[in-house]
Image 1: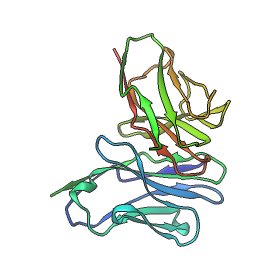
Image 2 (image 1 turned 135 degrees about the vertical axis):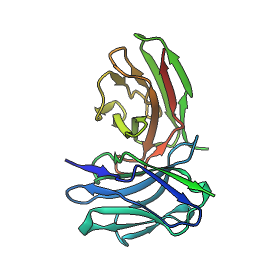
Image 3 (image 1 turned 180 degrees about the vertical axis):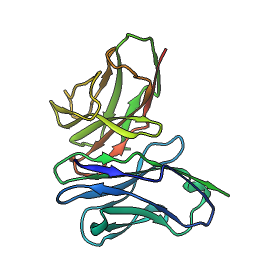
Image 4 (image 1 turned 60 degrees about the vertical axis):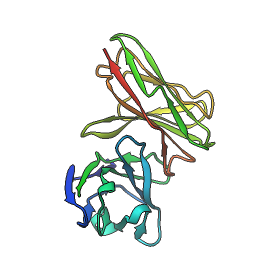
Length: 112
Length: 112
């Protein structure tokens, strides 16, 4: 069955630390992958997306993600987090013909 | 500005009553979605619609119903059959089902 897994449920970091949030997918065929962010009290918004091409995708606010087909992964990274990155992060995946499947989310807390 | 409007933001209902949550979009998107967000469970798909007058069940459709009579509108009814309706409900839309989704601000439903 198609699935998207996020293994880090809650991550706590200090400002300036590096971030990597894991996302693994289980799909047959072509897959489109996304990261969404939900800041406290705000709606979900798209951070970045991968459809094809360069496996290293750059998004907003200094985030990037790398599609590694051999590992079925699409991990989210940021070299140096800020307090304002405190939010919940969702990985999502889908095929060209089907709806997205969301992971269970990772709550990131960044302390000054 | 184009976007998705969910109303109301907070909704309280007595047990046993049906309640309808509104979702309107002016983005001219074909696809619309309803998710339920519970702590630690991420986003779970209730229903989605790829086009007017058509909709499909998601992963947790029991106790919910939808209609898609207009492109702009995708209301969700939480029926008395839904055993645990207290939750945060998110509506989303996308140009097509495989495209990034735009989210509304959500409706928090509490059953008294």
